[in-house]
Length: 339
Image 1 (tube, rainbow, N blue to C red):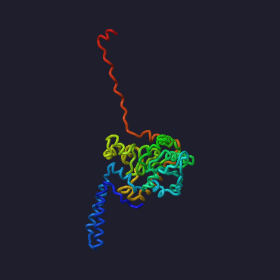
Image 2: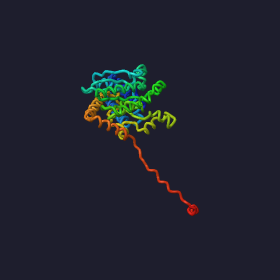
Image 3: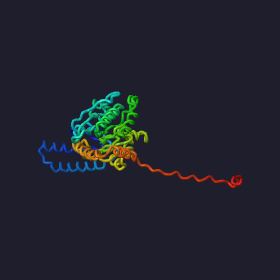
Image 4: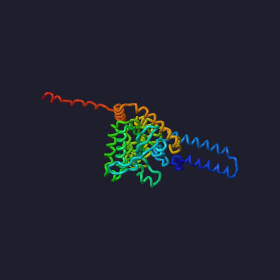
């Protein structure tokens, strides 16, 4: 995958410095002028700017990186990490949803079932993949493959990267909420190890429909949330311009999710995001999957299910407070005498 030329708003100061460096280098070559000191100064400034930008990213900036069009997608990871991937199609009820891909493969010589949400790289592919927003048949295909994995004793890996399930009329007509609810129920009792990985966007029930797992991993600049920042801003502030404030309030970034025990591990990304060095991300995820499965495959089915149940039951922070006891009503002297 080529390094991206796409520039996010907050990266523009860095892009300006890169242009200055390119112009200075070109000038040096064309005019045979020694400007090594000036080049070294700009390179030093570029490095300092990178560290300043990417070491202090806020939640909204991480959301932007998670949506970067050159970020590696599910099929990129599958092609680099797994061997002999055999894609399986259709839900055997309605059709084949290309926003969810799945099939068997080998991870370090062991057979696994992989299910992932897939976006497109261009307009044509995005239309085919429905911009990574699954229809009900996508979730039913995912469940069919999970049940197949259970039958053959294969661990399940799910790769999450969706803005959310498709909210259109056709999706509602085919009962998308029911499809997601059934997946959540059935994944909670699936008798094989499950590891879910949030690659980029983890949007609402669309993500949770393949996200009930024994281990939930998330890349450093990915996000996982009950609603998108834009949706939250539209509801609370009546204005999508408040999306940055909504992103902060939702605590949707990887490190907040780890603190809240929503995820089990944060996977490191290269400076500036996964699109800057996909190979590093492939290596990091490969090692994490092998580590987690080496422990999970030693756990009995009963303990696996109990642990999965407890994991999701304890999510959320709340406090219970007993209602103050109401004082007994006062009685007047005349009433006492009458009684």
